[in-house]
Image (cartoon, rainbow, N blue to C red; front, side, top):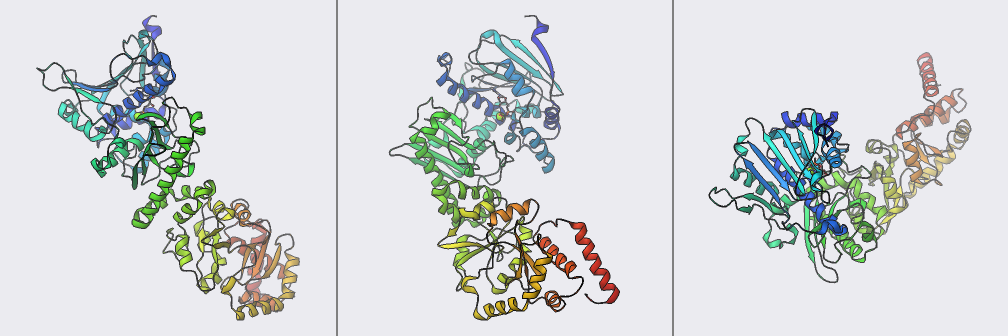
Length: 632
Ligand code: ADP
Ligand code: MG
């Protein structure tokens, strides 16, 4: 092959170029994290090699050298070199992985960086752009690599100054693996120091389970190498030897999140199955929490060898925020995703992991409510999915739910179902809730008026998943049924006294004629018109016909805005309603009826079907008002 045919020049994608520019010019704090990122990639590459060896006989033969990551520096050449004997990359892989990144993380990274306006680099690892952090300290980066299983002539050399272009060339490389050489920028010479590099490695990469080696400092010695890090899998060490700091450091490694976790559990189980769990609850949601195919955060190991990342085989989707490690001694090393699904050991281990996570959350809620509040804010909506998805654990999950209610201090979700039940009023036998498109709409709903007056607490539900939560899935808690306050005839159970019942039936009789007329006028618009016992200050409200489930109501409220069978309810005590009753022959009765219906639609947080005719009628009434000073 001639050199020309062999060497190709490429232009970075625009987004990559922007990232590189940021790396070079904006990330000035904690520059040393480039080493953490390169070591993390080297460690991943060795994990992948070990894994491929189980399935590919041709990779199984050993070259004698133990698997390791090497860090070296050269004062004269002003370079730092990070090399590994991992899986390496083919030419196509280099172009795909290093040159043109099509991964979704890139755009989010740029956005987060500009949003947070931070010059620091704690975001790098999270978004899968770690390799580029080399350009934080290097003005030129050279990478040579050879894919495991390819011939010595199929090595690849990649080079770039990070200014928009890179070059790829096929080269000879005798050994498998990857070597990255950083040509340092002016002013970065303090990194050319063994002591400094060792301390960076110990600070950020101690938990890497492979040896990270460096040549001994003493130049007279025979270039002997020493291992700089602990190099043992953290979860295999006894709890008594580990500090919170160790656990937190390891969390950073498995999660790429550089804030401390809220809680963790480390549990070694022996018995029918032998396994170790090290699982963390993060303190903030990752950017892709709601991306359907987002990777989950638990890594499966078999006897300390990394096997695969969870994509739903290990923990259920509603615990997708959990990060950490499951290490089993009962699975074959060549286990595949397909095999996992039918494995009894896996299903046993995973259901035990779920129970332990739920217990960890329960302990957190009980003992550290402030931390639990943070958890709920970040992940509560995800956990709610578990009510539908994990029937066997429904009760445990229900105890973990938090709601905003009419008793909450503000918009905080600070009420548990147990709190609610504990303070139910004498005679109350239901848990009342209000489902609305948003929390704000729920809080302001006229449907709450009578409940407020009676001092009965109502849970306010404004999240998309709440439909699923209340409809059929969580029909009762602690023996109490859940009851919507916007559905059917209000049911106050034992909360209504005799006087109230009497007043209601008297009102129905008194207003019978008016109701008949309004029904006629609103035929096709309102399914029914009746007197209400749920209003104290508003003249009217809309409820769903009883035959209709609240689920339908909520779904419709997100679309056109109304339940399919809307019922208009009137407040017998409201002056407007009283006047209409007195003036049933008013020629503008139809306008009044439609305006009453329209405003009730608005307070529901819904949209009026024909806003122009609503405005026309309203204006007609206002004009009449200014002409003769009366309402009709
Ligand atoms: P991430 O590690 O989150 O995927 P990086 O930017 O750190 O993102 O790395 C990009 C990709 O480059 C890696 O996913 C991997 O495919 C490849 N890569 C980087 N370093 C190495 C290495 N030492 N050996 C093999 N592949 C590597
Ligand atoms: Mg990386």
